[in-house]
Image (cartoon, rainbow, N blue to C red; front, side, top):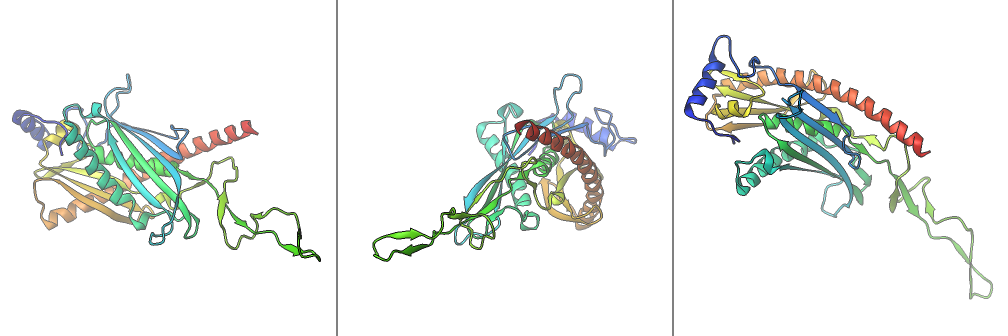
Length: 334
C-alpha cells in the first residue's frame, strides 16, 4: 500500500521524468541509484543482536529518510512433545504512529500485520534456520525474537526492513551453554540397617561427559557467545518499482505513489554466485506477463547481488568493531 497520496498532476509529472531520456528524479539520482544508507550494529547493549539502519537521512541535521531499529532477543523455551526440535524464529514489525501520521489506528495495524507477515514467512523458513538454537535435544531450545521498529518511512520500506533484519541477525550472539546432569549420590546401608552412609561426597551435578542432560549452565566468555550458524544466508530484498516500460530502485514516497505496481524479490546467497529466491510478492493492481516477470527476476538478481556484497562488507567491518569493544569490556570486568 502507498503510504502517501499525490494528485494526478504530480503523478503525471513524476512519471514523465522517469520515462524521459535521460531519466529525471527529484533528487538527481539515476533509475538504479540508492540514497545514502547508514548502518550501525550493536547499538542496544541489552539485546543479543541489534542494528540501526537509515536510508536517505540528511547528513547535516540527521532528519528525513527511512529509519528502522532492529533488535534480537533470545529466550529459553521448553520443547513440547509435538513441536519441532531446534528452536524457533518469530518476527514482529511495529510502526511508530509518527512515521504514518495520516493513517488511522486500524490502517496502521493492517500495515504492521502486512510487513510482519512478509518478514516472518521469509526468515522463519526451514532453509534459513540456524542449527545452533538447540540447547538440550527434545527438551530446551532458544526462541529467537526479532523485533523491528519503523520510526520514519520515506519510501522503500521493504528493502530497509530486510537489510536491518539481516544486520541484526548477523550481529546476534547465541550464549554458549554447558549441559548439566544430576546424579543421585550412591549410599551403602550400615550393618544395623537403620542408617545410610554416603559412598562419596562429590557434587551430584556433573558437567563432564554428560550422557543424559537435565539442565544447562552459561559459562562466561569474552565474546558473549557464538554467532548464529549460517548467518551468511540471511536474505536481502529488492523492490522494483514499475512504470510502463521501465523500473527503478529505492523509490521515495511520492515515487511509490506514482507507481501502479511494484515487484518485491528476496534472495538468499549460499555464496555470491548461487542465489536462491526466498520469496516474491507483487504489490499493486497491474498484472505482469510471464516473460516480463522472468526478465524482472533476472534483473533483481543482479541488484541483490550488489546489495549482498556491499552489506556483507559493511557488516564485517561492524563485526570487527564490536568484537574489539567486547574484548575491552571483558578485560575490565576481570
